[in-house]
Image 1 (cartoon, helix red, strand yellow):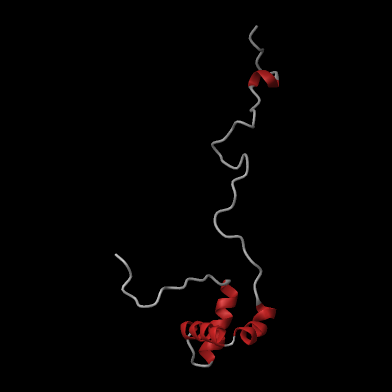
Image 2 (tube, rainbow, N blue to C red):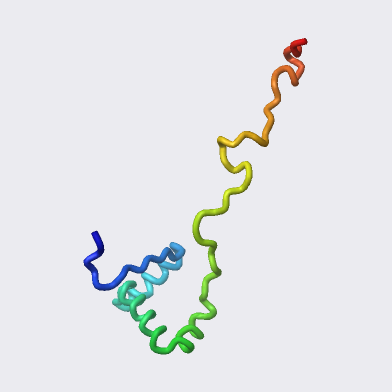
Length: 97
């Protein structure tokens, strides 16, 4: 069933410390985080160059998205590259002849 909301959701995951600090600043001013995000998006749409210039020193580094690439040998069930020494190799048991 599709959403009955008029506006689509926006999901972000800021670092916990940044979120906590921002919430404290906004709470001290009797403002809500959701309203702040909407105000930021509105300001961006209205005056993008000015708004982005103010954010430039705070812009986070880009994070890789999606799942990390699988590297060879990263799977625990893939044992094709590793050879386990046997007791015969260790000299404890004589090798069959």
